[in-house]
Every structure is written in structure tokens, then in C-alpha cells.
Length: 219
Image (cartoon, rainbow, N blue to C red):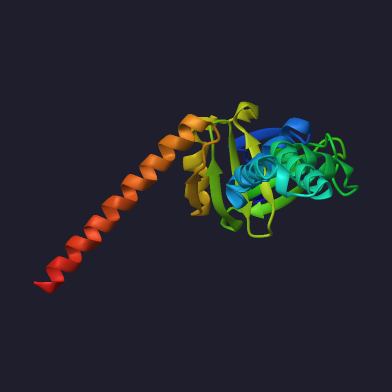
């Protein structure tokens, strides 16, 4: 009986996938860029465009605007452009300045039979992070997976850092275990354009099918 319990415990802790991470500048940039793509996809473009338009307006209306107004307009326009260009780096700086963020912390994520565990070797601790059913969404881009958790945590898994299990098969594994929603969210411009075209085609097909269905019902 004791041997059976031991085997059962070992089976529960069997790791199908192991991913090493380090909360360095690169990982923070990846996290910030992803959050911007998902939550504020057009913010950078808007900020730069508004800044350029404001600078252009100051230049075009130079004769009809007081010197103080022109200076303020130019400064505000430049600030918008610079914030648009460097906002991800500003976010990383603020993240590093947060005392609650452990910079360069190394965490190994273990994907076992029953859930996800986090091994923090620097602290010598291993904790149960979540059950698979707590994963509500899986995003993927060219280089990383992102797991959205019900407790508002977001795990970034770099495909190059899988030490156990094939990264190319991880999507099927995590979706089968969790039943979560899957979203392909490319980062490269070419793939972003391809994804937008594909979504447009799918949307057009859905609209056509809906129109055909309405016509059938009318008949």
C-alpha cells in the first residue's frame, strides 16, 4: 500500500514540460510589449501621430500663435512622440523600480499531471501555482507562450527555454489540460498583417453565411 501511494505521488509530480525563466530586462520587455499589444494595441501609434500633428500645427500656424503657445505646443508634441517611442522602456524602468518586483529572479515552471508548480531555486522553495482549469487563456506569438490565470497572473514562457518537452507540442498539451481559449497574437509586422487579413476573411465569410441564412428564412 505504501509503495502504491509513493508511485501515485510520483506520478502526480511527473513533469511533462519544464520551462526556465529569469525576470531580466529581456523578459520584462517581452511582458510589456505583450500587454501593450493586447490591452492598448494602438496607443503607441496614436501618441506618435498626435505628437507629430501637434508639432506640424505649431509650425503651420507659427505666425498666428504667440511665442509661449508655440513653445508649449512644441514641447508637448515632442513629449508625446518620445513617450510613444520609448513607453515600453519607461514601463520597464518603473517595473524595476518597484520594490515588490524581484529583478533577475529565476523561476522554473513545472507542468505536471495535476497542475503548474513554480520552483524558485534561489529561495530553495517549490510551490503549487495553479490547477490547469485556472488557466483561462493561452496566447502565442513567434517566440513565446503567455498563460492568463484566473488570479490575474500572467506567465511568460519563452519557447527557447523549454528544457523538458517540445515547445512545438506545448499548445496542444496546455489546451487539452485547461480547456482554455487560444489566441494567436503575432509580434512581427509581417505576421500581424497576415493575421489581420485572415481575420478579415473569416469575418467576411461569417457575414456572408449570416446573409445567406437570412435569405433562406425569408423564403
